[in-house]
Length: 185
Picture 1 (cartoon, rainbow, N blue to C red):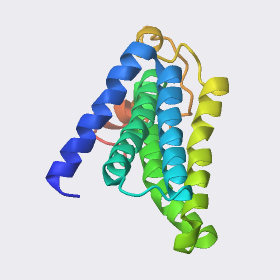
Picture 2: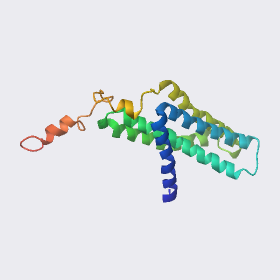
Picture 3: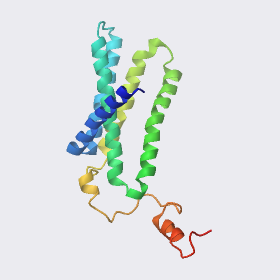
Picture 4: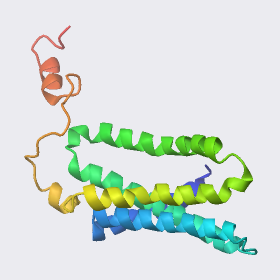
């Protein structure tokens, strides 16, 4: 990806961060997923009714779709940063980023398996509208309303959600390198 496009998508992801700060994780996820789903549905309707001369509309819908996708991603990353203890954030965020990156590959496999020809474009877009609407249901029922930075970071006594490994725990690092004879062998 060239530098200009990367900067554009980073700026669009900034919108998700601002929305997250103002509306919280649940509303941000619902808004982003709803926008993404509605854009895919609009594209499917353009294909179904063979509306011509809509290049500008398709470009705008694609831009809104990508922006809304980054809004959901920003809410996910911000919620992770707010909920998980500092020692475990890197692993969890790395896992989420890997899954976000893998989603393109999974969608490519689904597309080639179930929608291989150009005649299947309409059904593919309906499928994507349905698929991107699932975060709405997940956020509506499973996301906590209080998973915002202002409510979760103020509690320093949170219990870790994942067990610490022996190589990454602070106790092991401290005892291994603070012995009088140097590191343990």
